[in-house]
Image (cartoon, rainbow, N blue to C red):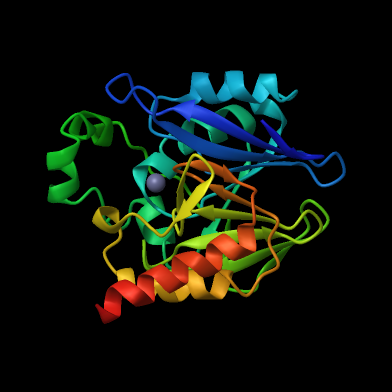
Length: 242
Ligand SMILES: [Zn+2]
């Protein structure tokens, strides 16, 4: 699905056990500065990702960089295999880098999450570490899509980032936000160890002028994106005071 001139959202089916559930990777096509994939699905999804790239008009070999919004296995999963095929550079926030590179054990899935999705145990065994070539921090500016800003949005993980494409006003929110049928929601509580920090991150995102939000879980939000961000914050503060 094309959301702007050179920005594509690639929905990858999550697993046969979870029909109708998709992971929404983002592809930014840039003939000048190289193509960028944001997040890399679960382990063993290289083929599905490759097919989605072909639909968008490029191949795995045409990827110049892969940016991870964070360390979770449904974002890093096929990263190592995609890097082997493409030689792409890997970028991630410094606080999540040791988990992505395997020097620290990934913080998730937690035992509670594995209880809800028992088949993830086997998927987790297939997770390969990935070397990070460039560590990002809040405010890092990337020469992608006419200017892309890295926004540090911790809470879901310690090193979660979101990406703001300045020219198209697209916010790639990773798991800092979720959505359902165009309706924006806050981060998923069961998978977000620090909800308080995560909501502070949502407040930072609400300062941006956003036209389109891409949620990794839930896809594209394009109707009144700024208004929906404000609503998510209001709902969270109302729930807290109740
Ligand atoms: Zn996720």
